[in-house]
Length: 351
Image 1 (cartoon, one colour):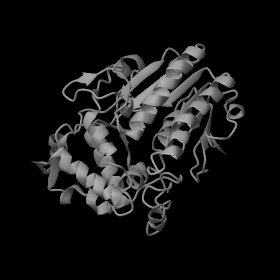
Image 2: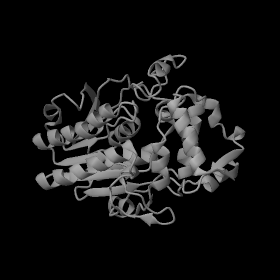
Image 3: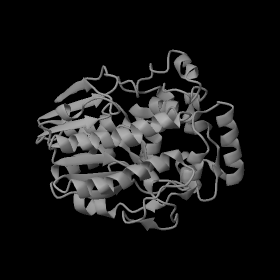
């Protein structure tokens, strides 16, 4: 079996490679990325490709599955670029896979594609995917889902799978995650549980996380299971709210108004102290808690890592400055003193 992974150098992409390397039925893997990595792995060959402009069909020919995990979070101040890569680029790649006659397409969607939903019970994959109004990330994830609906009708011979994970963490992605969501001013020492004595309790801020390696395993299971199609929620247990995080970190919680949190996030965004707009908080407060029953039942997926494991692994990576030798994940990408991160305008251009 031959598999092409588009966006293979990122957080999820490198975990997909890790799982596919260990799969006996997979003979070869083609990793595609705009910037070629130094990372070397068995069964993996690399090629440079841009989903917005390159001819992808020749790269997909002979593949048994194409995995689409390419997605930009930054530059968050250039929404046109994000749209062209995330929405138009994803669909260009999907159409190229159909043109090349690839029998299976795997797409990395997100909990962010869901419309606002409950926090006190879990919803399944039938929950509407209208996104959260005001969140560019949610709008783009929801738009790709909408276009894939039409794509599946037009290409009934292709098996299409959509993975919808919660927040995806792993130690080796820590510096990439910090650059995308924290920015150059966030020191790694802040991720030491020993110095976190207090944690804010914001009403309705209850999120799900999943370890990146477990997401990679879900993709592997879906690729080898020829009957797998449709959407699968991916999340570890339990969901993380202030009480659970306080338990994990042995920290006391205190009530903090969501309105005040948004004002602070917006101010930091406008002052370019951090690279993400406050609509990320808006989305987090509204997205539903997901049930993962379908992935467990139909794929046989069982996460190896709990939500606490995933959180602590990320925090350990932040303290250690961990990474992988790929442009999105390498600690060197931001520069020795994070000068290249600062030069981006903290969200104005891609690090």
